[in-house]
Image (tube, rainbow, N blue to C red; front, top):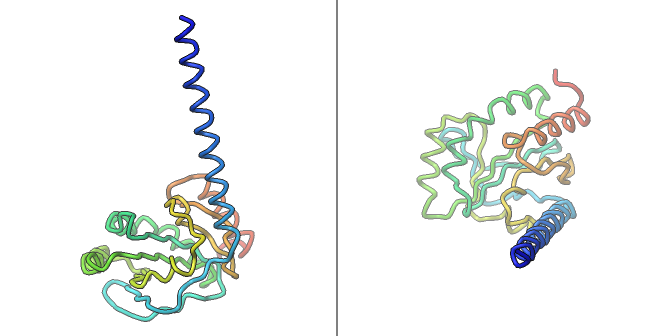
Length: 188
């Protein structure tokens, strides 16, 4: 009986230490992400809107919601769900280009054609950026590997003001709307 009690206390202690370490790691990654401005690349990017290819200018003076998918993430999964962003984009359109979305995908070369096809098939009418040279990652070495940190709202100077995906977390969604309206006013 005494052995079982010590065993359970040991398990609880291990779980406590693991949770504490996880929270510390989360805080460390959050601090790293917010410590420097996010640099948006200006070369090597291709913009797809349905099937059109263009060069893209990303350094606008506007609030920016960046949704970044690297080659480690399931790029085709993200593209298949991209139309779920329509309501957020409709909301952003009420601010006369003062709130922009940047869907940045960094696929590996062997997947590039299938990614282009998936984007064309999605019929998504908002620009999608293919970062084939991985410039976004190179310019932002402080970007955590944890994909939970790959969606964030930037102010007009590209400083991170909110981290998290508003589609996946109701609290982040509420904070997103609150911050946007504090910065830009109510939608028109």
